[in-house]
Image (cartoon, rainbow, N blue to C red; front, top):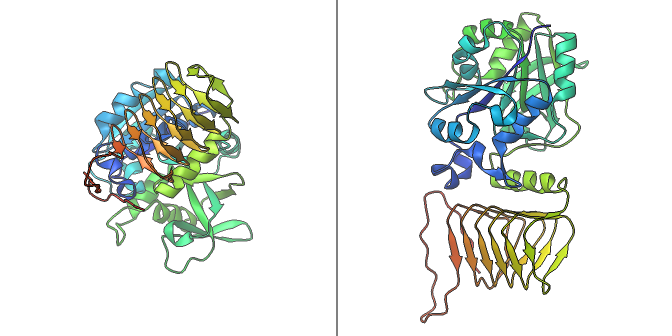
Length: 357
């Protein structure tokens, strides 16, 4: 049996998560305190894939620094440079020397599939179709690649159609044999000036090759937007067991599934799970509510926060209203000083969003 390779796409500019992605790769934004990209690597490893290529762009050094050679995950990682984000099919094209003639699983690095991909990889390995695509029902199909099925077979694919033929969106996981390379060579850039993977798969269909689909029944998230990132964070936190390594003061209350890292101190506060707090944090006279992820070295004092993600080294001090539905970047400070005259003071990057009371 020919081993299946993995191909994870970790290029792209992450424009929908700016300003966070001005300084960080979108695939490294954490969900439940673990970079999104790591979930994809782990899903491939659990499916028996040990040889993984990662397609990188402008953030290649950051991706390399986080993942290394793959040994920490029990896999071997090869990095493949893509000169510009010219489409998913273009990523396949530039990866041909790495993939050779081997079958492979392509996984978008900012996607999360809660139940993993092991049964689907097993089916692909066993049945050996030319292509297998994963689909999910979505309320907004015009924002995705969309599949049209007839008698259970894929007959047509379209990228971000204005009038979708169905509500079945392509999930960011695809499985191919070497026939895909010929299809990629035949297509031309779309109106977005990208080589679309939907066009390449459509060529396989038009050539009467075996293209199969599988509708995902569990949850799946493309974490490219803030609301989807927070929803993925919420779902992952539901699976975390309670684990407290830090110090919880006797004057504090802990409710539900809560993870607290080593070196963290909680004083006079309420922690309500599911939530995760990293290492060396200080939570003082505050409320940290459900569905919140707090990374390492964060200080929260005299404040309330829930349903949010707070990155390393940030400070939230003296906020008079509850923070929710927020993504707070590394080393940020949100404070409420007592000086007069009282005023708002911001240092805000491009594409930021702020709501004030």
